[in-house]
Each structure stands twice: as structure tokens, then as C-alpha cells.
Image (cartoon, rainbow, N blue to C red):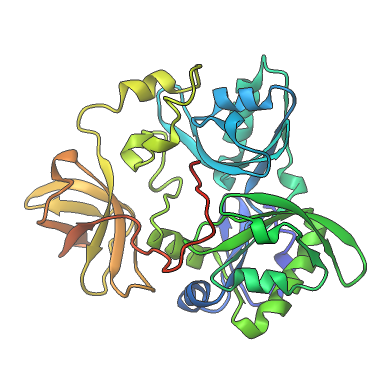
Amino acid sequence: MPNSPLHDRHVAAGAAFTDFAGWQMPVRYSSDLAEHAAVRTAAGLFDLSHMAEIVVLGAEAGAALDYALAGKLSAIEEGQAKYSLLLAPDGGILDDLVVYRTGPDRFLVVANAANHDVAVRELRERAEGFDCMVEDESDDIALIALQGPLSEEILRNVEGFDAPGLDDLRYYRAIPCTYLDRHGRDHNVLVARTGYTGEDGFEFYLAPDAAPALWDALLETGAGSGLVPAGLAARDTLRLEAGMPLYGHELSTGTFPVQAGLGRVVALKAKEGDFVGRSAVEAGPPAGARVLVGLRSEGKRAGRAGYPVVRGDDVVGEVTSGALSPTLGYPIAMAYLDPGVAEATDLELDVRGSRIAASITALPFYTKPVSRPEGDAHD
């Protein structure tokens, strides 16, 4: 089972670990609530080195990705990122991912750790016939995320970090930067204004042997501002509050993009050519296919993944993610419901045999009070 290049740092910080997609990753350091609160009020530092990084490069790299993925990736500018989907031929979702254009003919595709093998295989197969190469660079790239309202302030104060384009860095944009560590070693870092928490923040792509020095520098710089290391448990409640889908919960091979509210991610009008899954998406999901909604309930007992949503004597849906929201103070959940009850007002959650009233609410549950710099994941 692989360890992150930051594993020793996590052990020293007293982290509790969990097996995540075959990796030993920190689930928490102190408490889930404290780490969640730090990200909402100050900043949190996450190790995401388990994610898959796949580089597509060559004269027809953009065209290959247009065919392989649901979005029109050839249209994004150098330095821009775009959220997209890897679809199966039948329209189901194999993975959701972020694509960065890091050069005129070079793209960095970031896939979920659990779908590493699928993403590499499918991108390679779909790129056949195009003038490009698909390289799996997952073992050569570490990923650190700094998230929270004080992220920019902390980054600006890291000694040795040179980010000349930071003033103009918008949401879902990335710039090449350098970091000179305290030992005089210079490291290349791709800095992206992206994240999975609903807060402003940055993600740092760099060589694994450079990651510990940057991790230490960020924590040292942010210590007086409330920055803490944060684990996967806090990341999950943060993304749930922000209404962000998680593969294996809201997204799966049995889910069409439109069911998950991701219809706009599929470039049916923007792309004239074919792409894998196009005909199935155009035909649409089967009649009666469930749709994703947000649910709110009272009290302190939250619906969890797999819990039924009921209306009277009928099971009309299933919770995909749920928690007692640390920020809002009440239980929230995302669930797939039968389309006929997607506006019902008499729903309940079956929480281990107890019925708890639930009401449908718009996603996201939490919206950052102050907007992030201009930009859009779906541009």
C-alpha cells in the first residue's frame, strides 16, 4: 500500500490514517469539527497526493481530449482549468476530473485516486489515432491544497515562494511558480486556484521530494493565522456543504450527468464532433431515472449514504452523502429521488428505523459570503 511523500509529516503530527483507494491517507489530526471550522474561518492544509495525474501532450492533444471527455477541452486557454467528465459509451460516469492546459499542446488531467487505472486506460485507448501521447505521471507529482479565506494571505507570506502572476490569478486558473526552500533548492510548482471545499484556495502540483519542504513552510507561515493540517473527514463535510458531488456517492457508472445536475458539463452544442457517450447522453436517461437533490432535516441525527428516503409507505429515494453540517448546525444530505417527488414537501429519512422529516433545499447548502476571484469551473 503506497504512502504519500508527506507520510512522515502526518505521523509526526499525530494523524489517524485510513485506507483510501489503496493509499494510507490522514483522515484527521485533531478533530473533524476543528479542522472543518479552520477551513471555513482561516485555512486548512490537505495532502491530496493520492490523486491521479495524467499528461496528454502533442499536436492533437486537445482534439483527443474533446473525443475522450464530455467537455470541449481544446477551447480552454493556456493556464485555464476546466471540470469535466469521463463518460462510458452508455452515458454513465466513469470519473469526474479537472483538466489544466499547461502549454499550447499539453494538458494535465487530474482524476480520482480510486479511478486511476480506469482513467489512464480509457484516455490511452481514446487517444489512439490522434497525434499525441498519454503519460501517467501520478508517481511523479505530489499535490497539496491550501483552502480557506486566509489562503492567499498565507501564500503571499511564504518565504522563498515566487508567484509573480498571483495578483491576476482567477478561479479555475493556474500559473507556474517557483519555491526556493530553506536549503537553497529551487522547485517548480504549478499553482492552481482550485479546490473542493467551497472556499477560496490553491492547489500545488510539484515533485514528491519537494512536497515536505513546501508543506512545512506553509504550516509555519500560517501558524499564527489559524492554519491547521486537515484530513479527509473534514474535506468530505466541506465538499458536502458546498454541494460538490463525490465519485462513488453522487456519481457512478449508473448515473447520467443530467441526473446529477451536471448537464452543463457536457458540451453537446459546443462540440460538433463525436465524443464517447454522446449518443447516449443525447438520448437521455431512462424514464423515471432519479435526480439529485439537497435535503435538510431538523435535530442532530443525519441521514448517511444508503439510508432510504420515504414518503408515506413508499421508498422514493436514497441518500448518497449526509452529515450534521458543522457550519450550519443542522443535518444535510444529498440524495437521489424519484422525479415525481422532486418537489414534495412530506419527505422523511429512515434513520435506522426512525422517521425524520426532511425538506428539499437548493444546492449548495453553503455559499461563501464573499465571492472568489472571477472564473468558473465549467467555462
